[in-house]
Amino acid sequence: MEELLKSFIANYASKHEIVFTILSAIGMLRLLLKPLMVFLHKIVDITPSDKDNLILQKFEGSKWFKYVEFLVDYLFSLKIRK
Image: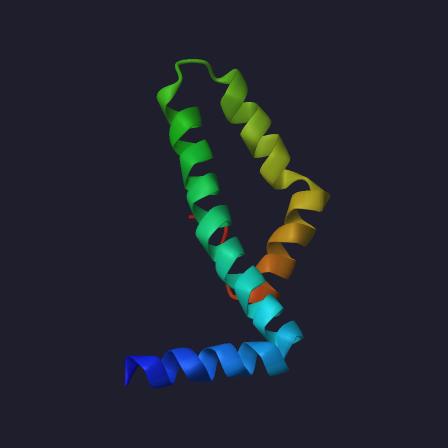
């Protein structure tokens, strides 16, 4: 059964490279973006300075971040914020 599944995936990936590439990109973004944002929030919360809190709030409040956040949520169904 496992060999059949491996064969199917390899065959599908070789025939439909763009679909496989898009799905791989979605998976990689899901693996990287959410933990990165959680990590940034934890670092900002741990530090005693309020300056980094303001920088992160300014970054998350920027138009650029809102566009990226919307696109990531719409295209990849991934919520960046908590």
